[in-house]
Length: 168
Image 1 (cartoon, helix red, strand yellow):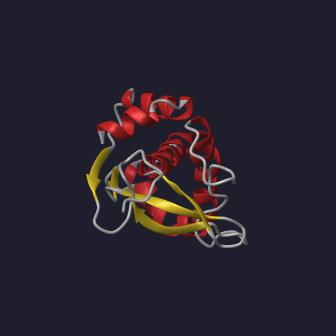
Image 2 (image 1 turned 90 degrees about the vertical axis):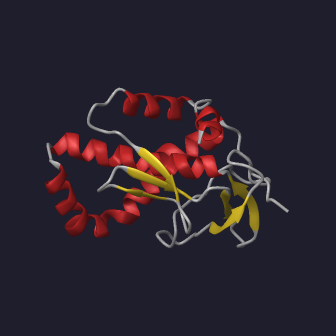
Image 3 (image 1 turned 30 degrees about the vertical axis):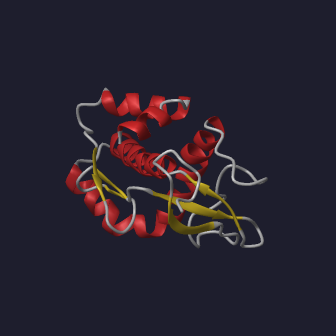
């Protein structure tokens, strides 16, 4: 994970996010390897990382135009942690109330949150780190099936956590 964070800290967006969590007594994010996908578990402040895998990005024709690094996937999950932190602070929720929010409200708001994380954290970071995906923008434009234009592909093994190259 050290290589991932060294790479991500080259982005002002990520550097500020990481510093915010480092300076917080209430949010101690932890990271573990996952065997099936990367995700953020808000009940445990845990980010699970599908180690060694990036994410295919497709163009408007559905063709793979590039691969997003594993590091950007980690950043995406840190973005979810930031959204949670902001919601708890804004509304003064404790962890039990936030878990209720997750169960009752987040299902309806999940598409908005996913696309917010892509737009506010993932996209600027991809641009700062110059993760180009073919001739297209260096980012995905949506997350899963939440918009009419879906450009997220499959997880693919990459040459390393900061690589956008498929491992042969």
